[in-house]
Structure formats: C-alpha cells, structure tokens
Image (cartoon, rainbow, N blue to C red; front, side):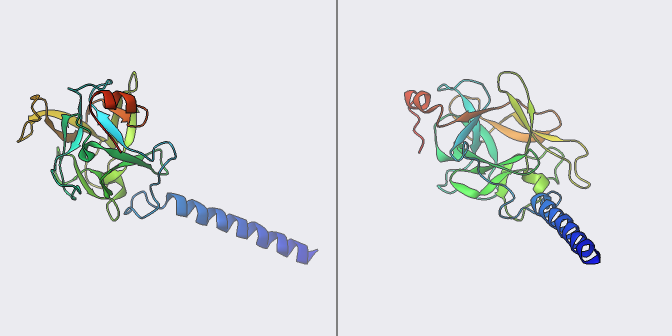
Amino acid sequence: MMVRLFRSTVCICATVLLMVVFSTTVFAAKGKEVEVGDFVESGDTSHPYFISTTPSLNTNTQVLNQYSSLNLTPSGTPVTTWKLTGDPTQQWKPLFGSYNDRVFVCENNPLVAINIYREESTPEVNVLELYGNNYEDVALHIQSGVNGARKFFTEPRWIFHSSNMYITVTTEPTSISDGTGQSRKCRWTTNGSYLYEQDAVLNAARLRALGVFVK
C-alpha cells in the first residue's frame, strides 16, 4: 500500500511539474525580451498583407509603408503612409504570440517588426529588430471596429506610457511626397487610427487590375 501511495504521489508531483514547465515555456516572453519561437506563422497568414487606411483598394489607397528605398528594410526605418504600389516595403507578414497578440515583420526583412520607441511621449512608428527587443514594444493587440476596421495598440511597459498606445496616422507630411499629397507620418498616441488588413492572396485579382504584383 505504501509503495502504491508513494508511486501515486510521485506521479502527481511529476504531472504538476510538467504543467508548470509547459506554462512557463509558453508564456515566458511577456515582460521580457523576444526570443525565437515567441511569435509564429499561421497557415493562413504565411504570405504578405497590406495595411491600408481605407477598406477598399484602389490607385489612391494609402497603406503603411517602410520609409526606405533600400531592398532590405533596415532597423530604425520610420513607418509612414504611401500610395499603394505593391513595393516590398509596403508588405507585412503577421506572426502570432501567446496572448492574443501579433507582430508585423517586414516581408523583405523578417528580422525587424513594427515597434514603439518608448522614450518619446508621441513616438514615431518605426521598425526595429524583433529578437532581443522588449515584448511589449512589438506585440500588437487589436481593438475592432465596424466592417473589418482595426486599431493596433501596444500595452504599457514599466514606467513608460500608463495607457495603451495606438498606431496613428497623423497630419504631418513626409519629407518626400508620394504624388497624391496624402503621405503622412505615423505616431503612437492614446487614440489611434482605424486600419484594414488586406490579404495579398485574397486580393490578388484586384491587385493585378491595379497594376500591383506581389510575389
């Protein structure tokens, strides 16, 4: 009887320990630095997305854009709006975390992701290295609106920003115009702008009709 009781106790303890280890492994990243495996692809999202300011796609559509002319978007690049061209600097790939959150990495440089620089009160939206960055500085949560509209926000971290900070399309023009007069800087504020995720695969025919071709 004692042997059976001992074995049962050991089994229960081992099970509890495994549960603790599993939970720690899955949820360890929040409040720490991002590690490989903290954010992963979904089968439905392992392809590019555009993030637009309006629900429909046309030649005047403004999308979130990595403000760079380089083939490989460098860390520190500002995020602005720009007219839809289909350039790789306008393409984003979502990766998903364990807290109903996500990051948006650049299609042409998946090592960098949309980021908030906390030391400014209304920081400019930029992209920064994903791995080794603070989890709450890149992990985006969603506030849903109507007709697929979404606001993307980061949660507060430590002494920075006591409220959620939202991606906001400002009225500040970019230093170079996209030709429409609508290219704007993006910042993090407590209000935010509604944006729309546009799946490049589901919109393939529409994009081709607009002269936009996506790999």
